Length: 300
Length: 240
Ligand SMILES: Nc1ncnc2c1ncn2[C@@H]1O[C@H](COP(=O)(O)OP(=O)(O)O)[C@@H](O)[C@H]1O
Ligand SMILES: [Mg+2]
Image 1: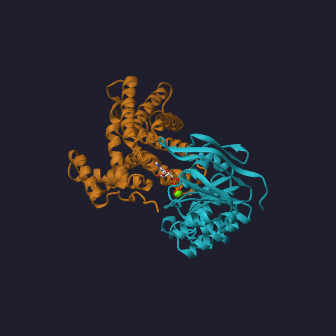
Image 2 (image 1 turned 90 degrees about the vertical axis):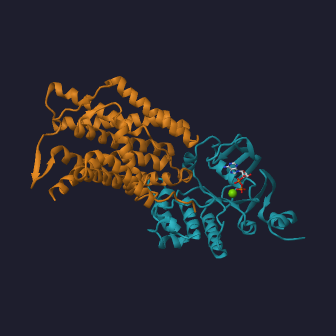
């Protein structure tokens, strides 16, 4: 029972990371019908940017809560800017081109960002400091929750609830959903589709940036090509939940995290990845559009 | 209601799809307060014309002046703010949004949607009120058409463009739709209507243009066209 609850906590933590990153894939796909393969690399980039800013603060004084908030905000802004730039340079010129051209452009952008990271920070592993959050660990009858896990869980939950409210309860959020359904009809409502796409890239990149920072804080080792690994898992999470569906990405991320943790806890860590793909295949057989996805809406 | 002020004026418009001409130099005018209808067989270029007016398609030649603005090169979303609203062919309601949310999107360009317009829409299209919270994709075809029209007038347009609002609807619903269009027109909105249902459209309209393979072949008051033998044979199904 303890193992179960422990793996539940660990799984939810990792699942939150996947969910934050998965949201970026799913939001871009929802509006542009494009898999933004460079998203994972933006996430990696954010971990490096965060690390660099953290290091600046180390010289003078220890990390305070204010410093941490500054690092998170600055990193999100830098990464959001990169996301917008990515869309302008790699995707907007291909908006009306065949989808395959955009996919190739996405893969190219991914390589450019990866190599950019390698040029700036080098090919060797960089290590995130271990004391960004206090090393406090709470022990509830044998189940351990670290301060870091608590922050990840709480902030992720907050961000996901905020995103849900933004998308479902605001005018801009409704316009985003409308644009995802039918771009031309959205234009006829007076919606500036380019602006909606920009908002999508800002929000998706910011969530990915927070995800990247959490990956740094939680796993600590950073490599220039880490975006592929985390990106792939988050992408799978988005597909499990139903690509294009925002609640789907949240659910898919959490489920995948939990599933991985249970496999690691009860079977073995080495098998986690294999089982991830088995899970993906089963879900795609049973529900081809993912858990919360609906088959591409027929236009009535 | 109709005065002599020109609201929409199109001159020598040409539009093509990848080099294939669909509209081959048409000119037309819509005066403030009028109901003008464009008739024509399938593939004549009616939808292409409307999409070019509202900015979804770009013309290769010609000019479009709307309410004294040259909108030939304007983006579709900017044209909406100038006071034009286009309810597209096939309704195109946002299927996974509720009826209410669809209507809110119609008022996207306004700072606040005003309650009066909404009440008025619910008044002339009462079915929408009953289904306010329902997901648009689950409405019947006729209800979706009502929603598409309601959504288009939420922005309080000067010009309402309707592309085949009666397409695929039962006669009783067509009647309701045409009645709503009449009421919208009486409230002071200018209407540009494309229809396959030529007889009903001519009965409603002040003036009409007939489009054949990208060219305007006839124009005149609705009455003139209703009484013209060529039009009767080609579009009203009467034999002489
Ligand atoms: N997306 C498109 N690509 C290529 N040709 C098109 C496209 N849409 C319409 N056309 C062609 O343009 C002509 C006019 O079509 P359209 O404007 O839809 O006619 P209507 O609305 O009068 O039925 C037709 O010959 C049609 O085949
Ligand atoms: Mg048509």
